[in-house]
Length: 89
Image (cartoon, rainbow, N blue to C red; front, side, top):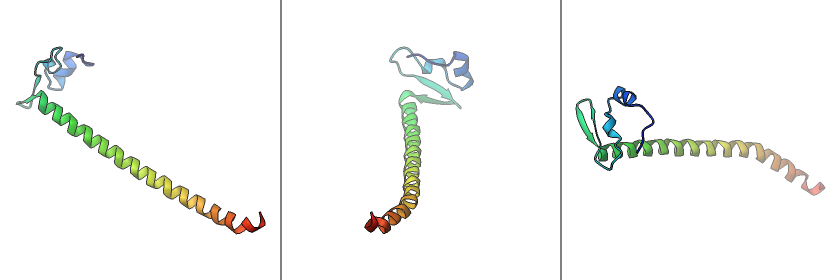
């Protein structure tokens, strides 16, 4: 596994470069005196991912509802106008 940041960048964030090993060994980081193992970090990342996906889903649903309402308010008057003139068409 490779990292995108340098070892100095990792150290600034309080993470040991060993957090991203090239082998399948268990990675650990010392954050505020607590030792976090790879499974806890994975769990935290999964939780963060779910939060982000939830916000995206909520925003998408809100946008869809907004667009539907806007289209409905734009299209309904046009439909009424067409229906009023159908006998002459």
